[in-house]
Figure 1 (cartoon, rainbow, N blue to C red):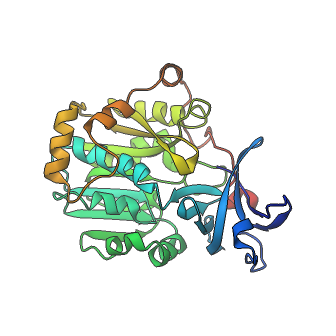
Figure 2 (figure 1 turned 90 degrees about the vertical axis):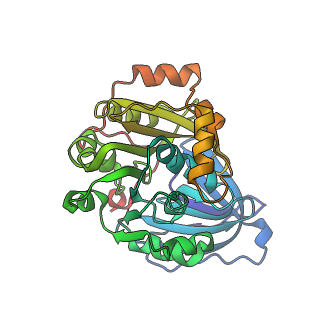
Length: 340
C-alpha cells in the first residue's frame, strides 16, 4: 500500500514527510495534533489517509523501512516499506484468518514454524491452541522484533511464552539448516515489493525444494497472499495461488475484508492431504482446541470466505503466472534494496 508517509495540515499544505531512509533524524513536530494526517500511496492515482496522533518509532534496518504510528481510527499501526502491515484495532481479522484455518484443519498439530511475524500476533494466535508443543517464529529483522516487543503491549506475554522459540534469521536459511519437520508452516511475510526482503519466499523453487520437504506427512502450509479485492486481486493474489498449486495437491484460497487495509485480503492454504471439514466440525474444534474466544472466525465465516465472487474465481482459474526468481510480480512500492 504505497511508498512515502506524509503528514498534512487541514489547510492542505504538507507538514512534512516521514521518509525513514533519510540520514537526518527527522521527527514530527506539530502543536495542533488534531490537524496531522498519515497518508499512504496505494497506487499512482489512489491514496489512503487517516488522522495521526504521533510517530512512536521510525527507522531503517538492513532490510526495510519501518514506522510505528499511533493513529486515531486504527490505534497503533505498523508500516514497513511504506505499506500498512497491521493495525491495533483490526489485526485480529488478519491474524485469525492466517493462523486458525490450518490449525483447525490439521488432525492434531504439535509444531508450527512462522516465517516472518515479527510483531508477534501470528504466534499469539497459534499459541491459543492447546495441542501445540512448540512455535518457531523466524523473522529476518531484529529491529522490527525489538520495537514491536517494546510498543505492541498486546503481545508482550507472547514473546515470553515458554513454547515460543524466537529466531532472528532469514526464513529460507533457517528452514534449510533445520533437520526437524513441522505440522504447520505459516508465511506471515511482507508483500512482495521490488527490492524487499521477501519476494523470493513466494517462488515455486522455494515452496518445492525448501518449504514442502520440511512439512510432516499431514502438514499444511498457509501464507498471506496480498490484496484480493475486485480491483486488486491480480496484483499478486492469483499468482501466489497458481504458484502454490504447482507444488501441492490441494489448495484453498480465502479472503476477508480488513478495514485498515482499505481492501479485501487474501490467504492461501495448501497440503497434499484433502481439506474435508464442515462448518459444524470447525466450530466444535474451535471450542475444544482453543484457549479463549476468537473475535472473527467461526465455521460459517471460514467456509464463506473460501467462496470467491465470479470475477476473482475466473481469475484464479485462468491465472498462468508462476513466481520464480526471474519472473516475480510486485505490488506498488519499493523495498530498501531497490532504492539503494
